Length: 253
Image 1 (spheres, rainbow, N blue to C red):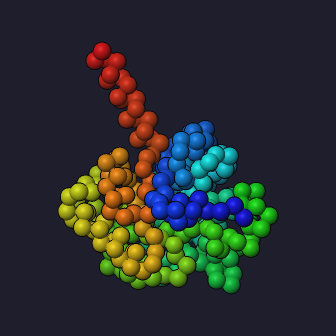
Image 2: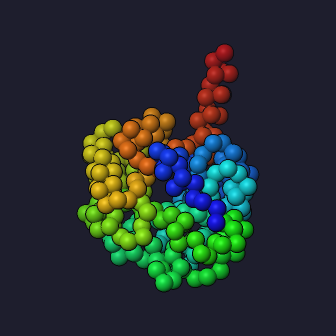
Image 3: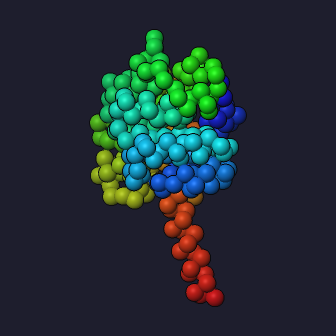
């Protein structure tokens, strides 16, 4: 089976760097996949599209050096199964508030006897290879999002979930949970201490720590803080920033 690129990069000292897809566009996904990221996440939670649009994006990513990955819209067994069958090699699941939530998520990603994933890897065979079934449980990665007050209270229990690969932070929702107003200000309290706490407790449990980043500066700071996986750029933000800078530069010239 094709190896998991995030695991490889982290094993070599990491961190793994990801791109983020908000556009409903296989072409945009293909461009992001050829931009140097280790993986690109197709976002079904806040991206303005759903599974029928996400599958062509995962197909486009399969033809690039970046590993196809997805964030599901919710802890939904059937949606997670469809994304995995479509070739996603890792799933980020939002709003994991308890160990029970995390266990249900992991179970949806693993074939029996360790999980309850249904058999039918339509594109899994195409992307992963003919021995996909034999190695899927040890290759597919599971990332539980910690972003609510309840999740922060249950962090140790969530991180201890058997089969869970990592904790992934949504800093905007975490800021709301901590009583701060987005956009997230990662150097300011209480978010700064929360990020440090999550890295320490996650690593103490023997799991990986990941985080969504909103700026280049934040990505570099997260790297220094010890995060193993950082999504460093979103397609929509890249377009808006680049377009605005180009227009401003030409107007000023």
